[in-house]
Amino acid sequence: MDFSLEPELAQFRDRVRDFIATHVLAIDNDISQRDEFQNIAMPVLQDLRKKVKQAGLWAPQMPRERGGQGLPFVGLAAAYEEMNRSIFGPLCFNCAAPDDGTMIALNRVLPEDMKSTWLQPIIDGDVQSAFAMTEPEPGAGSDPSMMRTRGERVNGGWRIYGRKWYTTGAGNASIFILIARTSDDPRKGLTAFLFHKDQPGWRLVRRIGIMGPEDHGGHYELDFDGLEVPDKQVLLNVGDGLKFAQIRLGPARLTHCMRWTGMARRALEIAVDYVSRREAFGRRLKDNDVIRAMLGDAAMEVETGRLLTMRAAWMLDRGERAQKEISMAKVVVSEALQKAVDTAIQLCGGKGYSTDLPLEWMYRYARLARLGDGTSEVHRMVIARHFLEAPEEMSTWG
Image (cartoon, rainbow, N blue to C red; front, side, top):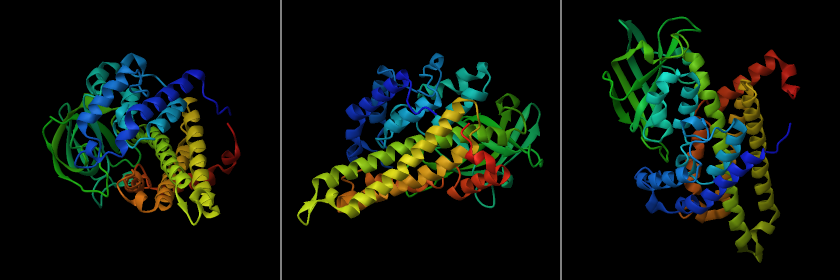
């Protein structure tokens, strides 16, 4: 397995790195550039997005014919890591969740004649999207078989009833994907629907406060009281809801890992800078063996996650599902992120805990990584299942 990037991909990564260093990193520490929910203020984001487009770095995950850069997953892994050295970097390139995962999925499953209406506005950054799957208890969370939102057949389409919550970005979204039950079949009972915010029969119930910081559009609870969706807005086929969810969530989990690796790197860079300058008890902190061990442990975990992420990206580029590899990356990188940020805060002391550095922002963000897109416990179950069913596959290279 060759870990070197092709020259074109390496050049793109370097251009992203330079853009982040030149235009974005300084904003991380400037609270005046944030909105009331501690995300980057929209006017600031719009200005940076214009610069990204002018630099030819926009939407690298999308095909060139749609205004993107057409990078493979391996190239995305390298570029996304550089983007998220800034806490706001991925947003600037239109590479942040949930739009990133939505674009990748819709580009794969939508008929060409629907892409200009439903996909292109997201690619262009003109609208946001949202993915409504998780439900209030006793509904579906990690177990989709508990789905209670239902779709009833009507003439020419479906009428949807039910409730969703923790729908990221719903407050600002124009294009939604919704998973609902359409039969009791254990394998083909769910269906994925596409709908626009202006379609009647649904409402935003409330914005759910979180530990934060929050995405643009928040995390919302949604109520569906007869949303009518025509047949043409069914994604894939009726009964393919689980299949679509895996198409949507698999690559999205991996792109999370790509971004988190960059954030973990940045946290450790901040810590290294601090301990290299700070002196205590007659020597610099970096010369203390305990501190070296803390940094070494965190760096090792980040690098382990990085290698797992790149291997899964390499497999996706070869047309493989990489299900267990993505689950491994999701567990390791999410935990490495929290370890890296926690270590950085500890080493930076009071300054790390303050808003003078972005570490406290990262710390609150990082806690979500072990929950979103499948908890660490669920992904460990997936890994164990693969091992129990085919243990020999855990020791092969290809």
